[in-house]
Amino acid sequence: MTTQTSTRKTPFSWFFDWYNQLPMVRRRTIIGYVFIMPFILGFILWFLVPALVAANLTFQRWNLISPPTYVGTANIERLFTDPILPQSLKATFLFTILSVPIGLVFAFFLAMLINTPIRGIAVFRTIYFLPSIVPAVASAVLWAWLLNTEFGLVNYFIRELGGPKIPWLQDPGWAIPAFIILSTWGVGGSMIIFLAGLQGIPEVYYEAAKLDGAGRFRQLWNITLPLMSPIIFFNLVMGFINSFQVFVSALLITNGGPQNATLFLVLYIYRTAFQSQNMGYAATLSWVLFFILMILSLIIFRVAGSRVYYENAD
Image 1 (cartoon, helix red, strand yellow):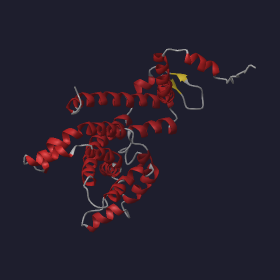
Image 2: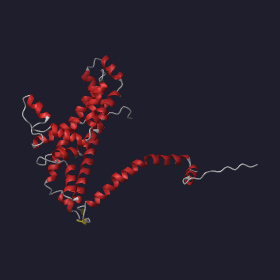
Image 3: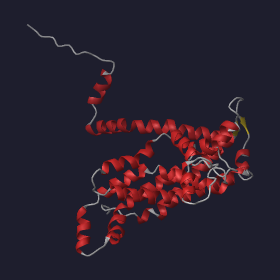
Image 4: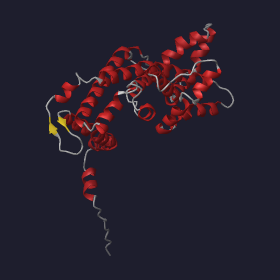
């Protein structure tokens, strides 16, 4: 009596037969490519293809309705005669220079506070983190009300303390400080990253410092800050990049006003593309933003990157 065994064939049987015949090294290489495939696809679909399309639009005039028209370097030449672009760059740089350091210091201060082992500290951590998960639109509407000149809660407390009524969103001189306050309110993400870093510092370092008579400031300067420098550097780079991408709050609260004081570069690109319907010049402005971020990121890595302390560095 003979026994017959049957093997069920699937549409991918040929692939598994081919895969099983490969050497182990090539199998591991294929598995590695499979795992990084989501990143490769995301890079191609969400960065490379849009970048190539934007590069092509730089030399076109397109209003989203008519077919694109080749205009040569006209969009690039317009950069040097555009009267609004310098104002937009000034608002963006001013906001970045002021908001990033203030946000870093405030987030680090909050992380130091909520790293204290007191009863109910989890509640405080939740309260401080909540603003960072509020949707951007809701946050913008909330702060438009808080900063209202006539009935806003911020001006109410200032007047209660004897201060003047401040036109936060009407005076060009107060518009950038208003957005800095708004950005500082959402430092919960940086705060949590700082907190994780603080909790990763071995307690034995502080105990040894106390035995040597080091005070709290000396411990902060000689232990905490050096060991936290990689995290400070990470938050610095991310804060810098995010500050150049302010859009939703500027669109909803001031729409670039007053007098273009909050016309940040991303908002100017949006208005050029979808309100002026000039996709070619908007693509050119996008490349300006890209080169600014790339050059300044290289400068930050060059200047601050060498001062970062890595405990396991060779």
